[in-house]
Image 1 (cartoon, helix red, strand yellow):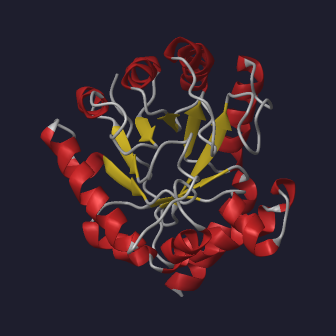
Image 2: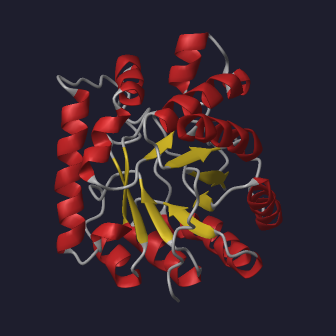
Length: 273
């Protein structure tokens, strides 16, 4: 099955989050049945999502790992149903090569690896075999321990070095450079000051010549700054989207597609005026 190309758009692309999990930090348990998940995916496409990111394992701080068979049981039927109903790009949010392989067979076009190829040595080869788009995200530690006590001397410099190393690793495995997307991993082994600095210095990552993905939707750094509980972080999330787009983000990963589309469209119009 041929991988779909990313759509051409004058605005940054929007990736809608579809968590098929009981324990994700914001929407855990909301879309656990295939029917509910499909309905939500199609609604996000209607609202303007270019990419649907399907995940079967929560990677919130201190989350436990999910067995491969259980992750497959959650995501594969949903990917198959989405593929049968829409031509939108489908991404699988996993760090397990087996899950990525089966997801691509089921119709996924993109692998969103929160480990940036560091948890499963076979992941790059899977991406190469399917000529899939590959999101290399930066993380320090694992979801189980990443927020225990993260520290950086130079967060931007360390992420840049990671991106260079892991992009080279992907290319050596046969991934085409033009398939690589980079995500600095806001909230994944980062302190508050690191998350804020990533926003401010996002343009530094554009020097690497690959699209930049930002996923900040409803995350805890927003609550730390605004003193808002998770269910009241939409305004903060949209502010993060606006700053990210102004500073060079190419793809925005969010829970609230319709609201994000309006912000992205307006910010981009201002930038192009």
